[in-house]
Image (cartoon, helix red, strand yellow):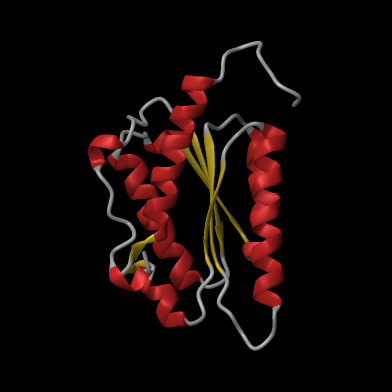
Length: 171
């Protein structure tokens, strides 16, 4: 369904696992701060709303969205997290730089998730305009930070449910 037709951040609270025992890392891009800080606020508040303690949430900032993957790796090397959430915003410009950055971050986070065995959540807005970014950072289409937090909680729960100690397949 097209985002123009609904608030994308609406979800059923009853379907979200309790996040009380999970540890989360959050990596936030400093580029487009107005947007990324709104994403962070939505993300942090959603984690806490669903039981995560503030002490079990560690946040770092990186210069731009391109550095989100490296920031996630730095967090993963520092301590064990149940999920790492990466928040950024790359607004399309006159060149194709947005395509290169978005592709690199998506590919990097996917690879990192597989390599370290920890879900790394892609909470990066890829809008054409600042207005579209604002609409998705707490505006009429919700807050992508909320969606990223919900995804992190669900993936952390899935990981705890499915993964059994001592059983690995190829990694």
